[in-house]
Image (tube, rainbow, N blue to C red; front, side):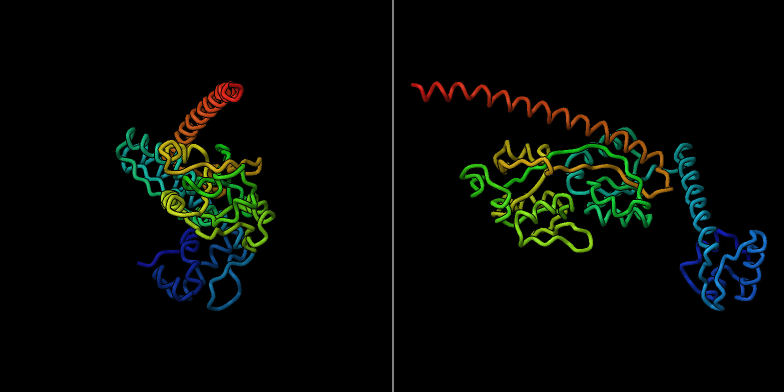
Length: 333
């Protein structure tokens, strides 16, 4: 049975871009579709569509109306979803993305705690770099992303960012690597060897390119694409452990491997070598109740990781301080 087109019908059918296909989807003839759309335009007092006879393209006022209609539709869906979750009519679902560092640090613990608290939870996680995650979040394929957000300045009007934490980053290699044999290396020394990691954000890439002129950041984004671009951190660690490649990670992500002597930290530090990660979502799009709980739990897990890292750093400093007098006594003897 034919139905009168509403703004939401029109919004859903616009991707077809053609009067005939849209009319068939609504069960109308093209002429009747035009007439009924004209009635909507008369009610609103604006032209929604352009003047082309076949193309279904919004006019400038139509773009504004449809933008607001899309926002209302999205909010209505979110409202229905939250009500159904609250009433227990559907399982809570989260579609999210994370970069390799977040996937290695707080993500797994966060999801583990949530599934323990609610066994009905369903989650899908995509691991990729920030640019890929941003595109998926803006397109509505992912509800939220958690990653180093230094590239967010390229999407100022399309993403809403909530900072979570900041980590110092460290280069790491296999035990016995040439970078460990002499005095602490310079950045140029480190960059003699191939990098095995995900895309390096622009604010770090500029320093790497200054130290090694052969490195060429991506022209479109300013990010650096390493010789071994690996978004899976476990694979990156295997690649580093098996050869002379150099990895990059926050200390908590590699501390277990360092204690087990599978990997070794390169003694190089710089104030710019840091990752600032946060939660991001599309502007104007709210988070589900499950996603809000995820963000709360993520912050709690991350606070615990940072506290443990601080205790570990203090312990290391005390051991080094205690070792210095012993070394001086041995020299004196």
